[in-house]
Length: 134
Picture 1 (tube, rainbow, N blue to C red):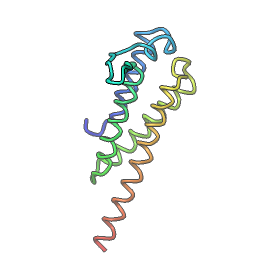
Picture 2 (tube, helix red, strand yellow):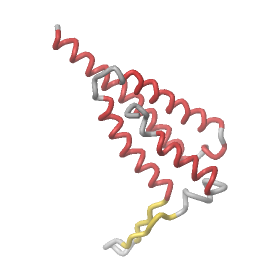
Picture 3 (cartoon, rainbow, N blue to C red):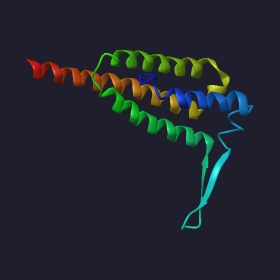
Picture 4 (cartoon, rainbow, N blue to C red):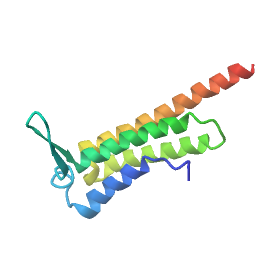
């Protein structure tokens, strides 16, 4: 369970909102307000559902990068699953009309950053391990 990519959570949430809760992402959760807070400047800050999903994905990306720094036999499985989740994001973005939004594009980019960072951190960690033993 610890090797399951955390970015599956925003992927599932986006799909739940896009397919089950709202008929259209443009008219639905992209404009739906989660909460509104009056600011000291007199303006009102509102957080939409789509922005909340992106924020959650960014926080989960931080945890994914920390997970990538672990050294162990499960890191290969973690990289494979991160690749699978990125491919799922990419295929859905290209083929599903409900995923052709800017929110889903940002989520796809976050999945790509997770994939690249995971490989980069693992390669860097492996290089240090080899140089320390040699």
